[in-house]
Length: 109
Image 1 (cartoon, rainbow, N blue to C red):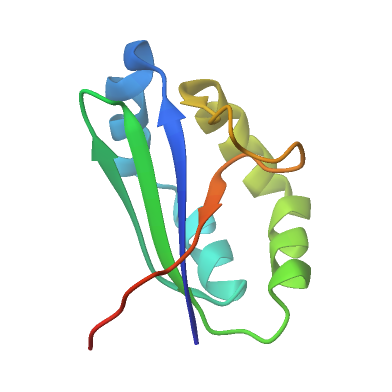
Image 2: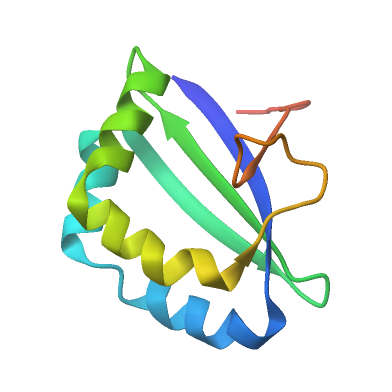
């Protein structure tokens, strides 16, 4: 199992919309997350900085393949069409990234 964290900005004018979307995530999206070996997925919001922090545990064996499979799903594409306009990627992210991955520097069980 691999713990993963990521961060992205959220546009202030879309915070309410983003919360509404995630209060009623489509069942097909939740199933796709599970099917792609993601468990314990959480998104946290930090205001007034307007940052979203995502955390999940990856339980599969090929993260890149699972993420590509998720990205290729038509339901994911529809969901992202709603969510992505709400988000503001960090200036420091790599060109191929949307959410910026974070390094885990501490864990205690």
